[in-house]
Image (cartoon, rainbow, N blue to C red):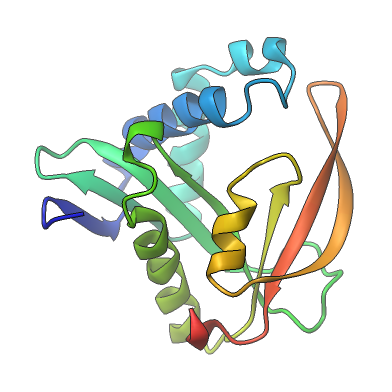
Amino acid sequence: MGCDMKIRQAKQTDAKGIAKVQVDSWKTTYKGIVPDEFLQSMTYESREEKWKEIISSQPVFIAETKDGEIVGFAGGGMERTGKYPDFEGELYAIYILEEFQRKGLGRLLVEAVVEDLKRKNISTMTVQVLAENRSRFFYESLGAKKIDTAEIEIGGKQLTEFVYGWKNINTI
């Protein structure tokens, strides 16, 4: 990956770049999985507002090029469903623009979230991923084990999600 990428905590001013990564990566990652109408309805503007809120309430980490272009992001915190008492933390989201995938950025972003969780004395973590999303193999490569299956609805379509867990995030 070279030294031309930097991982850092996001600031409010990064919301626009994060929104662009989210919308663009959803359109490539979920094409043919999530309904087209839903993907087409995602706008940079609406996502930017959402990310401003998220950044003000929880840590988000970004990957940026030396020119300051945001090409990926990840966020995490306390496990949100309450269904997995053995797991305290959760990787909420990680997205990387297609042309920057498979270069080691995903691992660096996950490590940033893990370091943040460890500072909060959290050593376990889950992540939810659509069953049809090939990125689930990335989580498996980082040592995650499938702990559950769930149904979710996106854009009027029922989809299956896999829930993965790490019993010890120190092994990532």
